Amino acid sequence: GQQLNQSPQSMFIQEGEDVSMNCTSSSIFNTWLWYKQDPGEGPVLLIALYKAGELTSNGRLTAQFGITRKDSFLNISASIPSDVGIYFCAGSARQLTFGSGTQLTVLP
Amino acid sequence: NAGVTQTPKFQVLKTGQSMTLQCAQDMNHEYMSWYRQDPGMGLRLIHYSVGAGITDQGEVPNGYNVSRSTTEDFPLRLLSAAPSQTSVYFCASSYAPGGRTYEQYFGPGTRLTVT
Image (cartoon, rainbow over all chains, first blue to last red; front, side, top):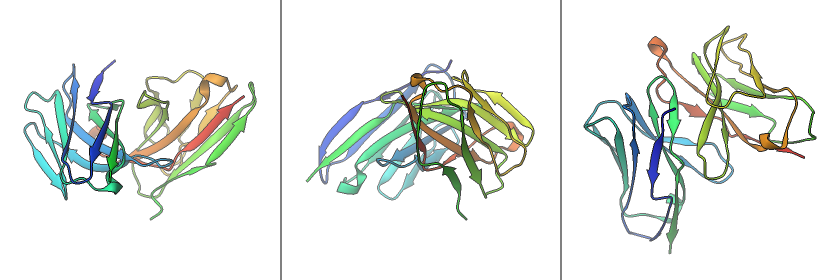
């Protein structure tokens, strides 16, 4: 099946710092999605990307759909305590394939 | 709109018992799916449906059954629970024009423990 490699697995950053995480795949995807999951909750969609090369922002979040269609990255600028959680990438061909997640901890 | 709802929120089963996890959505989405989430493994697709009367297997379907009699509901049945099915289960839905799923919206999850 399709494999997504998401890195890093975990990050510890100071409040106010910028964060970057990425996903790579051995397969081409038509759509890349980024989700955030808070403890005890379901994943919440942050950003959806539909075209190779597309760069999309949602507040302090920016994500890009790689030009090869096999990768995507998510940047968070000026992190705040409520950014804590697990961030998942997901690639879609006909079904969604999820990365294993990046656990983000923001230190005050 | 309530979005995607799941019941129960927590469940404990003994090995061999059967049960049904309920999922409903009020967004008129064609596509619905069930995932399980285990530590360090992300979300894995169990079963999915592209419309009423149509279901198909995902990555990890063994031990689970689904049916889709209405657009709104997509229950997941555990036939004979095993400890390996201890997990958090999420239901999701999305529009699916042309059979392609796009942005999926998730329910709050059901935490299942099998002893």
